Image (cartoon, rainbow, N blue to C red):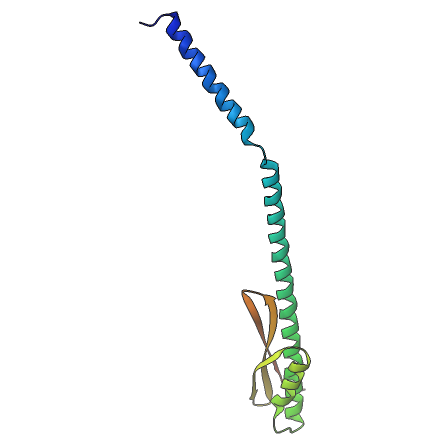
Length: 139
């Protein structure tokens, strides 16, 4: 059976242990503000990068679609005017707009054109859009 001396010793040991743990914990948060600040800056930078990539992708998609529309109209007009190679007009239109003609096909009186536009997004270096143009019968 323990006496008063044994009980006091256990209480004393527990108090010392609690003091050591609290001392370690008090000093453990030094520099936590710096790490939190760096993490916050990294998160904001990643979000800004994602927004910039999405914006660039959106602009390139619209540029490709607009150029495809113009190129298909140019090819359809050349076909209507009797040109031997209506796709040459589509090629000139795409190169003048900073895009690349991926495909050009004549289907009856319609011109079907696909255009590639380069992006600055690493995982989507090209966007492709297609357009069709041709005469519509007027009633």
